[in-house]
Length: 386
Image (cartoon, rainbow, N blue to C red):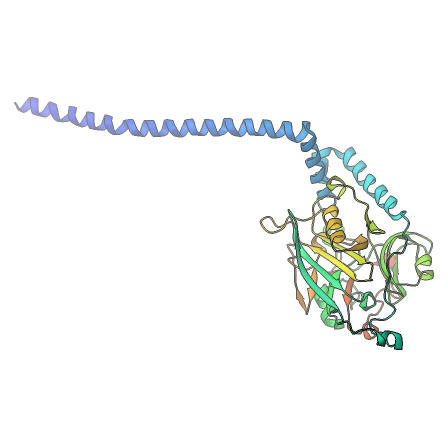
């Protein structure tokens, strides 16, 4: 009896152990199956995506959109992995050719800026009282992939180009607004920016403020893409030399491109020609002289990826723009009102140091804007030295 009892217990334990081991084998087998199914699905998805990305019209359009987006960032060279270096170089060349073509479109001068925001003539006084428009208004705007703000300035003659207050580096727009007592400000023209980490002190092209040339990196007869305002409050866009700008009575100007609305007509025909998706700052003018700035946030998934110039063109046209042009964007894009940043700049380093900003003043004649580059040897400016 004792022998039988001793032998029966190990057999029962073995059966229990065998039963316990079966679920663990099934569990490990299930995980292996799931892993291989996942691997297979990933492989198939990758194959389908690759075929779509490189061999279909919609995929190719998406690739070029991505390349266009990279063109305006510090990672432009990455675009070569999407469309090849030759195509990338060709794409950049095509854009600049198109920008030059846009600048050749004749402006029929449809904008009629009132001679005075406060008419004092007896004829004007006889008219029924019309409530005066606020100098500055800000409204949120958004589209499929972007969010931002529209800054409206009722009197174009209240806008000035501001520059840094100290030699050697640029200045944040918040600092310019506070230092000069402005109501609002946005970033303006382009600048030399080594590795997209420059000090923001050396502009590109031309800078004009108060009717004077503050900076010019070419000859007096060298044409630049210009965004400006003349003595009558008319927005000036296109390609002009410094001598031409002086003869035209231009007061405020920076260099950037392209102009994309002329005579109330959009020049950009579709999203594919919209120069990629990015944070944007652009400027426009309505027929009554009102100036609009579009400030679009980007590079922030979940909030705002960015906009194409085609998107901005549509926003401006919906708000009655007659003329419009692009300004510096990307990590420089910023809107300041009442000494506070309104938008969400994309720069990982915070608000950037810049050489120029469009500032709005209640009394622009008393704005103490001085030419910080006067007397400097431009060839000795080091844009990378902080």
